[in-house]
Length: 143
Length: 163
Image 1 (cartoon, one colour):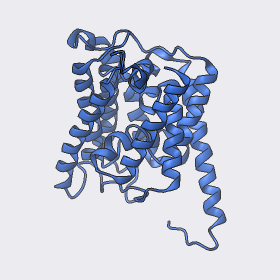
Image 2 (cartoon, chains in turn yellow, cyan):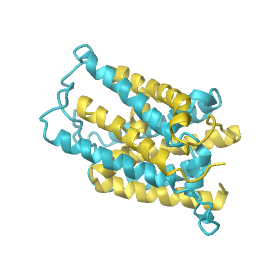
Image 3 (cartoon, chains in turn purple, yellow):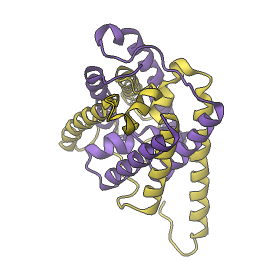
Image 4 (cartoon, helix red, strand yellow):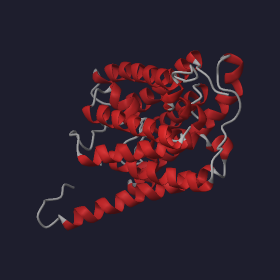
């Protein structure tokens, strides 16, 4: 169903980079989605507004892209996102992602995009480790 | 600290929303909102059969290159366009929390193919099931937050707390 899609991957990747760039140049904030999301409970009230706006923007942008994207990029993955997994798997995986991202103070965006671009040693370590355990997990548990 | 939500310009909030929209659009165009496509990248066992999907590597590489450009532009500025200062990292050293946290994160990511950004973007079509993942993720983050607060309180008499 899904295959190699270099054009839409490059365009989408550039857009992700632009989103990160905007939040840094205009707001001086690191676009780390796990930190932005986790700050609902651990952050200060003064920062809640922009964080909620950023998070609301994610599905809005996705909706717009799902509408116009397939006409622009032939290799874009077809259809709407679907979760073909059990509630237990969603809960378990969510818990692990939450604990892990909080301990590591970042996820695929904060460490993966911003941190690597910033040549942060912490982020290179984090990305190396989570890529390795993710690949191992898929190897053991199956795709 | 130096600024409050009231004094923050409209531009600050507009940029946050725009950043989310562009980021979410990028996740959708690149296909990274499909957990199955993320897993197709992580599944290296498909390399021999030629069915491995390296798209995620291109997404990450291009995103990093664009961000590098932004960091160079920002480096020439004293302060961000709509804020008093650029935020500073919490920690600089590679420590146990980082390594263990990243390892746990990777296991969770590999199990479902979901990480925080795509999970939020997936609200577009997987509501309400995705709420299970998001609620569990928030619970996990709260757990770590409470654990850190307790650890800090216990070490308070010996170690001076920065405020």
